[in-house]
Image 1 (tube, rainbow, N blue to C red):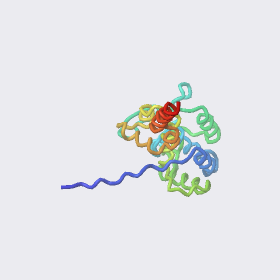
Image 2 (tube, rainbow, N blue to C red; image 1 turned 135 degrees about the vertical axis):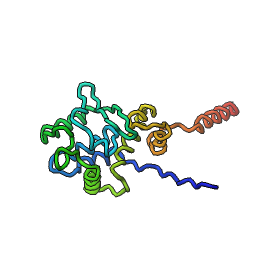
Image 3 (cartoon, rainbow, N blue to C red; image 1 turned 120 degrees about the vertical axis):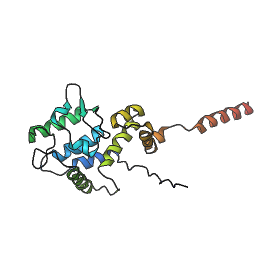
Length: 202
């Protein structure tokens, strides 16, 4: 028997400028959805992980976010950047959530991934982004932008909570800055050829 492999498509990745425009266009009232979408990009969290963040998961002393029972029922720690912490504090002062960082309706429940996806699509439309991006694109963009900033792929693997390095390594295919800045071995060849030509002329 022969099994046909499904062709694997490269993930859609937004530029830093597109992410900025999208987050600024997050629907109101208030900062709730901008803060939630910012955690998705700023810490590389999945939709369900963003929804299930509790206030107690934000560790401002160690600048970490604790992800409890992510995919595969695994806990992990991700970075909390100073800019993201500032936004989360502004949101907290405004909304004063208790328990869940992003409560739903009723407030004893967290916001649903469906609500978050709807907020993403609204922000994407308002930002004028026409590419087929989804909420998960923010996670893809997080990983790709880290790779382009020369972050070790194994560190990115831990941050994303990937069980296998090969899953993380696919972001190398869309890290255009990394691809563009990589020196082709042809350049070494050309240098050797130029040196040979110069010796021939001497």
